[in-house]
Image (tube, rainbow, N blue to C red; front, side, top):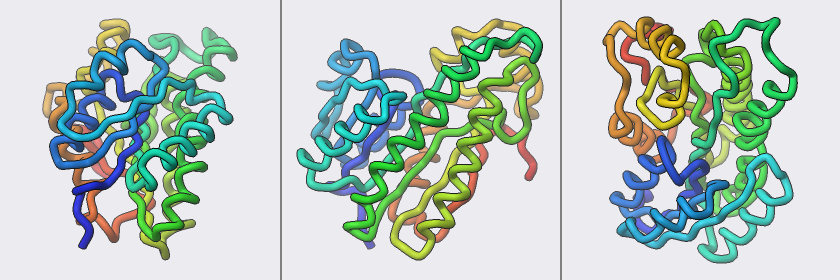
Length: 247
């Protein structure tokens, strides 16, 4: 069985929050990192803090050509792509009902949350097929399964990510590639901290555990999902919800 040693992981949204936590965990397990984020200075600040080889790529994941070029450069540098974790995401405007939403905001959230994950997986899969192995994980949200009132753009975009996961997982179930999603409830990240307090309270009160999840808990679960040990489960959405999700 393959191990994490000398594998290469592409992680989006890697400069902070979920992406950074996942990068630190995988690096500790021996994985080489190709870190993607739109915030160049933040990427440079963290690049020297890992125990394995790291390359950073400052691109806009909503730009398909930039994503394609970055994936080509990653493979040119590392000769392989074993893992893709799509953790880049935005909430858009929250705590508002449908008539108050703006089309431009809906489009922006879909561009990052759905199209960003679509582009990276679109251009990573052909390289994974060449080596008959790959692990793709799209970070979705419990909001994509249940919907959060006041978060139309975010909930709908994460539902689209879950739908894409089911399709891609089925498309490559007979190869060595698995495609799964993770649906966290509230995880304390800068993204959550920037949300209105009322919105965070609304989401947290739905969690039977009565607390937010931690970045460490999320990173540990991600590490299993993208590991060689998880070879049979695909097209599935894992929950990390403190008891909120019961299906």
